[in-house]
Image (tube, rainbow, N blue to C red):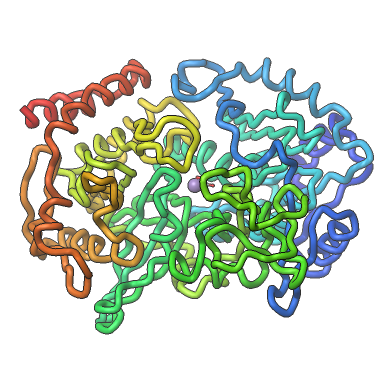
Length: 592
Ligand code: OXD
Ligand code: MN
């Protein structure tokens, strides 16, 4: 399919090491994709679901020991350890290549190596970057065909250029002890072995579009961020775009596909989803920051997705979807997960492949779940009812506001605006979430997750912050930077803010601030809304006093947080930019 000698030589080298029985090039055609689905069904790798109820949908179960990203086994392999920084695991490239070569040697014997040419971003767009993933998994091929733009047309676009990301994935023995997800940013290379779970093996996503891309972005003057992108359309038809970064378990996909509250719907407001996970951002000729979603689909968490929490996501999963590790309803040959509805199937198989008795399900004991808590749907973005008509636009969309968020019981107010780009970068650098009862371990422990990028920066965190500061100087018309917290609780631990669609009320204030339409109150941490400027019409149980409480700055808890921030900055180490240390000192002084 190509004469590109860089591609052909590299494949020869990888095939000599992994020794597949045959090599198949993925062309993206319906015929080939259908043949692969049939082959995977015949071996039990995937199960064809009820085609009347779920057209073109399939179910896959991973190995029981292989259900999530493995940060402890994820490495950044730069020649100098200090370039990977203190937050990442590091291995010397030569040592890592040697170690993993042993695991790859002969790993594809008796198997087929699939060659997947793919593009992150619309083929031909100035944002787009190309990659090739070699894998011995049909499940990976079928997921990549949803999550990326893949096929022969990408090879054509690559021509005879050496400029592509080389990804190698082998399932090997799915051996946890020898599972490695390794990135060689200086070589444009990703090696993943002994896993079959999406986040570790769909190499276009976290590995390329965040870790390698963040490294390239710094080198080339753009940004790769763990951000959703949404467009908010007013009754006049004007659309303003917002990108937002949240750590896991903060409702990112729900915000990306938000349904406006009735009062706004009636006036004609709409929200459009451009992306739910990753944004690539570049300065446009007009001096604004423009964003694309480099992906082609959603790899979303299934549990908790329902027709109230996210009807758009639920609708998206009803066709052309691969479900992973959810419950198989044998009566209807459909799928189910905790939080879908109150009708768990009586005749069902759980994510481990065992008969599942829903009557034994105990909410507090995750081991009784039918679907794994990290079970997923892989769905096409174009099937989302609220997908933006700019989703495929090679130019992307201009960003008016950047939002950082976290899950904080007390510290962060519902919303605040930074004083400017430098202070906004500081706000991103101190982002944090508190652990919830849903996860194992202590409740209320603060995990700092700067820009929600802690596991995804492909180089030193301090250098990454410096890149943010440097980018700010190159954007004449930079987005304003905000922080939100949907999770403030009252003294009994109940959430005060309703969240979900009502978060739009906060987005409206944010956009009003971007357009200088509304005043704000200056506090030690930034600008907070005047209570009357958050629209509470139609919200039951929320008064102006509730809003006053939600936007109040709890000085004591901020003072406690300062110590934790200092500790984190020390961990990041000596490359923390002086400007951010100054911001921290200034915040401390303002808090008194
Ligand atoms: C994540 C994801 O872990 O998007 O951030 O899957
Ligand atoms: Mn993510």
